[in-house]
Length: 135
Image (cartoon, rainbow, N blue to C red; front, side, top):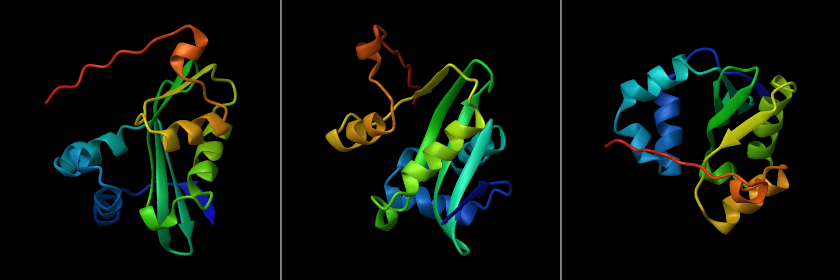
């Protein structure tokens, strides 16, 4: 597996990835997803040869805050170290950033994954989070 910068947005493979992972809120508006990729702070991809395994996308300023917007791995490639490798590679790009944040599904599996990578739930560090979702 190789982690490299995802420079050329290829809609076919990204839509297939998000579709197979069940992230349909993103696939319902392909143009917004494309713009999100284009305007991201950083996007990294994991490949095995020419096969895309997964991607991680970060937004923010890269100096004081980085927000992990998406970390997504094809379902048949999950639990094989792809997500961990992507997350470690993204964190290594911004060692000086004090706040690396993310929002995820509230499931035992996702909580365990992010805790194993050194993340804490906001309530554990005296914080809370808010989100406004527009339909």
